[in-house]
Image (tube, rainbow, N blue to C red; front, side):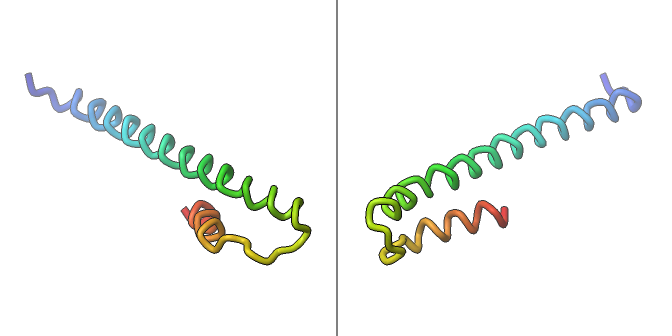
Length: 67
């Protein structure tokens, strides 16, 4: 049954669910960005040179920071 007072509570609940989805997505992006840099760090320690650092990894890390 339609209840105008209850409508406000329903809208608040929808926002909470939407915010939870965004939080999960941002956490996933942060994890992917962090994990994507591990192979590059290992390569840097092994070769002691910055040649050959993946541009794709840098773009992923930058997009995670911007997002």
